[in-house]
Amino acid sequence: MSNKNIKLRIAWIIPTVFMYLAFLGSGVFLIWNISEMDNGMLGRWVTIVLGLFLISVLGTLRIMGWIKNNKI
Image 1 (cartoon, rainbow, N blue to C red):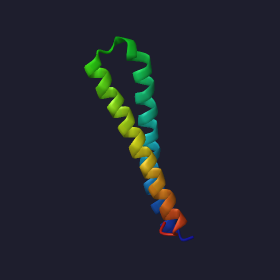
Image 2 (image 1 turned 90 degrees about the horizontal axis):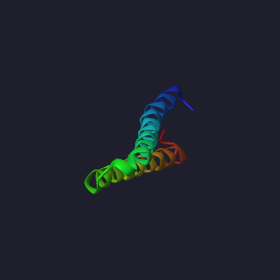
Image 3 (image 1 turned 135 degrees about the vertical axis):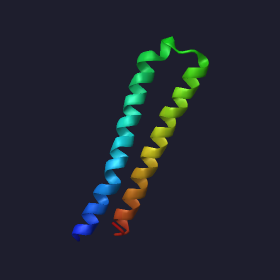
Image 4 (image 1 turned 180 degrees about the vertical axis):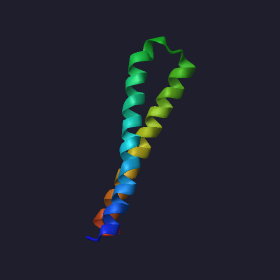
């Protein structure tokens, strides 16, 4: 594996890790404050948490596919 591929993998993996951290942080925030939120705010936060989860999983699947196909 070339040095360029390792740098490219790191460049794609770091934002995905940050997305997982944002998902976990938002999820913890939602769980801690769920009793104090009205329906409008709860719906927004659930949408944000689900969106972050979807972005994280799709990013992981994309990276795994690229690694499997030896693109990075």
